[in-house]
Image: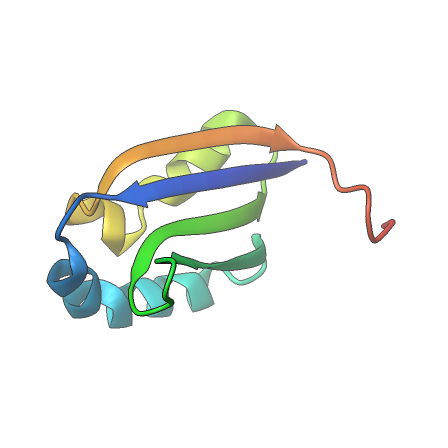
Length: 94
């Protein structure tokens, strides 16, 4: 099953994100087999990252939650909110 994960950064957290990003990318590489795709959202002018979007392959909501909890970004409390939703891929067809 696929899960859509949307995590919004806390205000004024650019320095924390930048400092933690190498560990975050290392973790993402470690779980590559679980990530369908991943990347940040950007501010309107594209100058800063504002949130993270992941599509995760997991057996359950609890597994998706556990995967996100291990992300270094979550361990440093970067996000002000997190949503996880079951996701149905329509295009492209699998």
